Structure formats: C-alpha cells, structure tokens
Length: 186
Image 1: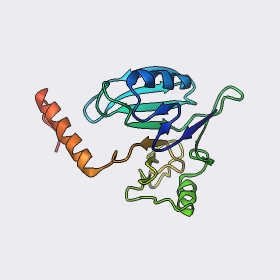
Image 2: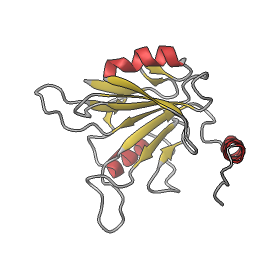
Image 3: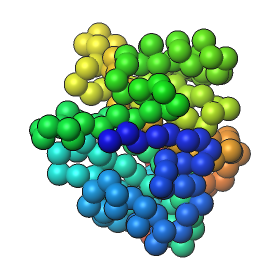
C-alpha cells in the first residue's frame, strides 16, 4: 500500500477541512479508528491504525470534534509481518520513511523547496506545509538523540504554524486550565 502526502489538501482520502464523520469514514481505510479526546496541549484527534502498526495515522481537529481536520500526521510504518502488506508513505515519488531523513531534506532542497531546520528534531517545509519529526526512535543517533529516519510527517493548512495563531491557542488553553482550577506551567 502507498499512502500519499498531498499538501495542503491532506492525505487522501483524508482531507484538511473534513468533518469528524467524513474523517472517520476516510481513515477507516487504514485500520481501526479510535477517538482521542482533547487534553491540555493536545487537540482532539482520530487515530487509525492496524494491529501491526504498518499504518498509524492521526487526524487532528484544533477546534474540537465540531470543527474540521486541521492537520494529518502519519507515523513511520512498522515492517509488515505478512507478505505484501508493507506500506510506503510518499510525497510525489519521494519515499519519506524509506530514505534517511538527511537524504529526504537534501532531495527537497535540490528540488527548490525551502527547508527550515531551525529545530533539527522537527524540520519543516513551510511553503509545502509539511513538518517532520526525527526525535528518538529505533534509529536514533546515540550522541544527538536525533533519528536517522523520520518518525512521522505532518500535513497541515496554510497558517497552521503561524506564531500569532499558536499564541492565541496557548492563551485559550491556559484559560481552560484556569477554569478547571489548574495553574498553567510557566
């Protein structure tokens, strides 16, 4: 199976802006679906995965279950235990998890894509609306803790990582915590 990343639209058949019901139907293609309630610091999400973790996909709803999908995160597929069940995750023809992370970023740069590595554990391609996670994992460098291969990739919408939006969301989260009698961390 090939899972295709198509920013800014999503990861078909799961698309940015879909309702929770539409999303539930779309992610069922990838496995069992579970709802993950919002918690402080984490948005409401749907998670679809199969028992072997060859597919592990999250649909995030920043505005809660009543809003639409704001981001889709695909985690590194585990090797399949059944013949023919391997999964590849691709952006175009680029195998995001099959190549070392540095090679993926180099290929993107060679194609003229802006790559932001200001946080080396979470590089991103802001204009493509792709974000990568290379923190920890089975292939992590012992010295730096940085994974040799990406652990996950996030597809989002324009403005998803906008500093003003993030600051407003942080303020809203702190207000929610205070309303529940919890003192927000500083």
